[in-house]
Length: 494
Image (cartoon, rainbow, N blue to C red; front, side, top):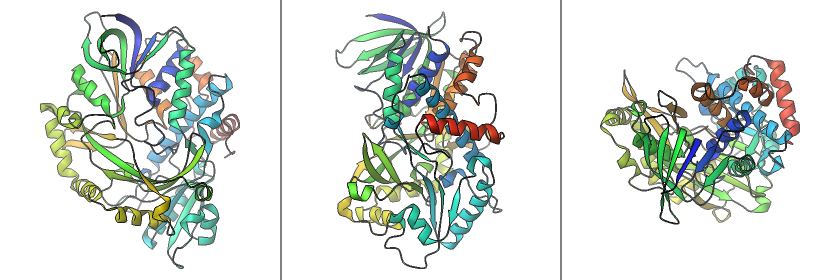
């Protein structure tokens, strides 16, 4: 067997590994990095443009990030957190474009307005109050609001055409939203890393074993799927950024910090339309309100999407259940993840989320007619002949132990690492891609602080001008940075 020794092994060739690897190499150019991916090329699972929302999640339009409490109050905390996280990503991409590491930003990011759209008087009252609160904050100061069908039709004509007159409706719009092809971005980041040795990427290679070394670090057994050979890799630090597959790898590593973690896989479907004439008439990402019991990834949205230079409209996703942790995974993924330490959390989470279970069952058995009726709530004149069905990516939502409740189902992402920070895993789902830089910063601070050269935080401030400050608190800094990012990335000025 061949043996390779590196400072850092990245498992999974998606946006998170590409972002973390690129940021670390900016701060520590001499770091030796090996990327390991089981598929023939990068960005084929959750990072693929067909497998994620592609919104450039910024908290602008996703109503599940601004929940209403029982007393009628609306919290902006999550929306502001994600908004600031996406700004970090924009700053990083701006830095890379300026230095020539990323070329032609129009190949991965485009200006597309972000909208929220609701029907019914109760939901309209909610959106009205949400707009009042958000537009008063400088991070969302450009948010427009309308209850006028004529105005909404100017923003997104497909929402209004064919709709019964007099319907109670409302919409918000932020013109400075984006559509991001995270697959194309990942390919560009990896191309940049290849120009920054020591770096190597191995595709068609699966990690089949993880063992802690007595002297520190980890030994990975890696199976070359094409040659059928097993190779050994010794790494000082291992990052498990393999989407849904990260949970199984974390469990196999056997670190105490992994105890109590389980996963709940959720699959999805899109309806998509590639008709050039129709796609040209919709220029927005329009988010609605989730059905009762629906997971956040199932919030319905009618999206403009640009993939390989072609314009599409996507609607969905429709949720479902598959025991696979990856689209290319095994039906045994979920059963194999069951452990004595996570069985109680899984049962407790199931007990507390019966409405979610019922929702998923209804989605699994939904007919094509029912799926299309959901689209027509957004686009009344939709014709079945214009749309086809596509499989979206797999998501594995986190289930973790909880002292009070036994276990909780947690939406979002979470970083789990060994006590000595030699092994790091990213678990969970949305909005991971959009806030990848923020997650990478969390990993830097918690796991690499002592492994980076002196002065790394000073270098980081040249890469991310808002590092150490708060865009949600400093309005002038926020406006200045957004203007710079919009100019460099060829986006409409917010």
